Amino acid sequence: MTETSTPTGAQAHHQSVLDQGRFLIQHCPDCQKHVYFPRELCPHCGAAPLNWVAPTGHGTVYAVTTVRRKAEAGGDFNVCLVDLDEGVRLMSRVDNLAPQAVRIGQRVKARVQVNEGRGLVVFDAEKGDAA
Amino acid sequence: MSADLKALRGSAAIAGVATFGCGEAPGFTDMELLARSAHAAVTDAGLKMSDIDGLCTASGGATMWAMPVAEYLGIRPRYIDSTMIGGSSFIAHLLPAMQALRSGQCKAVLVCYGSAQRTASFGRKEVVASRKFLDPQPYETPYEPMLPPSAYALAASRHMHEFGTTRRQLAEVAVAARAWAGLNPEAFMRDPLSIDDVLNARMISDPLSVRDCCLVTDGGGAYVLVSAERAKDLPRKPVYVLGNATAVWHRQISSMHDLTVTSATESGREAFAMAGLSAKDMDMAQLYDAFTINTLLFLEDLGFCKKGEAGAFVENGAIGPGGRLAVNTNGGGLSCVHPGMYGIFALIEAVRQLRGDAGERQLKNPNTAVAHGNGGTLSSQSTAVLGTADTL
View: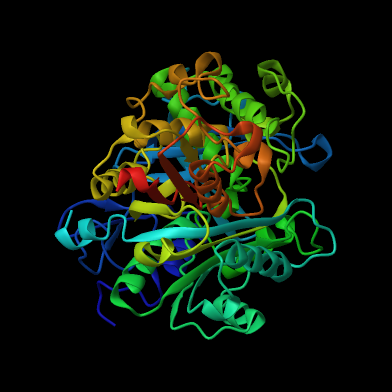
């Protein structure tokens, strides 16, 4: 195993790092583009392996929906797509606003939420940003 | 566009079509719905099951579906295509089948589908649950999007944000589909539907209400493809395949580059290039309307209007009966039938219209149609351009 390679597949590595409370994305040493979701080769230029880097965590809401759910099952919740400033997109949710208050164009910041040992990337609307 | 592909234009024709069990078909399995449709389509083509030597089929559940279908129908196909790219599969099966007919590999291709997802005990809910294990999407599932509706809702939110598209304009699509369904005895939902009914319906995943979402029905559909020469000797008026192309750019909605531009831009461009025609030459559009936003996206991406202008394009009943463009004349997936995958029904409706078999909803002497399939979460797109003998 070389130092540039992780001892597991990209998916397991990403999750194990998340479970430790850290959010990493990938970066291609050849074409210099960031990559998300995690994978074994660069979808832009085909190079491998990719490096793991910590994003700034800052992003912008690209698309948004409120998934309707019965109150007894926990009520409505937000699902959105966020574009990180590094140029990658991921599905997530904005956690510190009511579902209906999440807006396209809103600036958000990533946070790793660990529940029963399992890490998940969620976002909070940045202070003072009303989009 | 290669010369070889262009030479395939009009080389094959749809000689038979059939549906069975559209709506609710309690007591039927997927396979039984498929088999009844298949037998009826082969009979419609003036052929016997023993004439079928090509088979195209796909299933939302069984991964090796072509094998039990061949077994059940008792055929030994020399050509098999079971490519499964969701609801567009049965339109995407066209071009490879045309090549197989052209090469002489086979002489009559049966394309068939059946699903009892509405009444089966292992229905849509169970299929969605099992897909989490069989077809995992680990970067989306933890956020619990209600798929597929939430993916289309995200696309709708972006279209509204970028172009000012309104929920009222989305509702126009559902209202037009229902108006067509009212003219189609096969349609599952035929009661009148108003824009306010759509706007006030129970929300599923904003901005989509339950009336912005397709039906969950049972149903089977099948068609038979033969060479253009052979079609002339068969009883039904042949409907020629003038162009077909397929494009896949992603699987997960989070991987879609621009949620307002689908790969129908590519499948449409290629299919129209093969046909030597464009959107303005089409007498109708049968578009895979799993959700109201689909129709808007495909009207734009196939060239019926400019990007961002489909909301205005569909206003005031423009795609309903008597409107400027006939869209989804059977009532579509929104009001006619949607048994898991709708694509084959869009194509069958185009054929029925081009043959003059559409009853009360029949268009006046149409010669051209586009039938467009979509699969996954705006993930796969396949466009077919069809025409009567006058277009050859």
